[in-house]
Structures are given as structure tokens and as C-alpha cells.
Picture (spheres, rainbow, N blue to C red):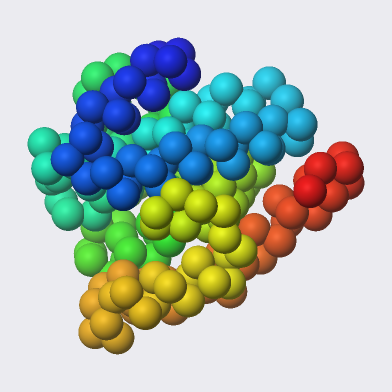
Length: 181
Ligand SMILES: [Fe+2]
């Protein structure tokens, strides 16, 4: 699937949840910013970026873990396995899957190469829920405030926070090395 079709697919799946769509468009913008450090993987990450939250679409929900549900849907419609893997593992997915007892379901997908997983996670962590650029610390603080302390997402993101900030930091350093902000 090329980027134009991926964009239209995400736009149509997320039509009922406009904020998720606004967020997803910003995640795609961030993927474009990373192009100088992604080389030949830039298109792959851009496609995964715009599609990363399709698991929230009502027609796509299956287990309730949106990263796995999105990846399963994209696999069914024939997306590149690497795109499915990036969607499956983005951001706090591994921690959420552990909390929900869905580690085996997540393992249906191969864990992506570290640089690419860091890239899509950076794009998600630097895009606010309503589609503006944000720093990763504020973004994670907002997620923790949005979900109560007993919520699975709160527990997963609390546990994942140091690792996620390290991932975002790696990407920021790689961008700085090539002279991008
Ligand atoms: Fe996201």
C-alpha cells in the first residue's frame, strides 16, 4: 500500500473519531521530519505512522488492545508485514499487552528493528491527542492524567515511561546529528 492509499484508508477508518485522525495526521508529519535519518525506510515508517491508530476504529476493534487490533486488520488487508509490526509494537504496546494478558497475540507479529520502532514511537510521543507538536514528557504526563491510576493504560504507560523517553531521546539525538531540529 502506498502512502496515498494508506492516508485514505486511515482517513476513512477514523472518520468517526476526528481527534484520532487529527493526531494521526500529525504523527505522519513527524514521520516526514524523520525522513533524513530513515533513508530507504522513510516511506515504510510514513505508512505505519498514518495507520498506527486504526485499531481504535469501531469496525477494527477485536481484543481491545488497539495496537494489536490495528495490526491484525492491516495484516488481513495485505499490508507489508513490517508496517503491521510497527503498528503492533508502537509506543507502550508491549507493556499494555503484558497488562492485558495479550503477549501471545502481540507475538503474532515480529518485533520491529529497534531504529524503526524508536522512530514510530518518537512520532507518536511528539504528537498531541489533538494533532499538535508536543514534547514527549508532556505527552506522557497527559496520557497518565487522562487515564485513572487503575486503568490498564495508566499502569502500562507508567511502567513504559523511562524506556519510551529513552527511545524518543535516541531519535532526537539522531536528528540533531544530521542537523534537523
Ligand atoms: Fe498514537
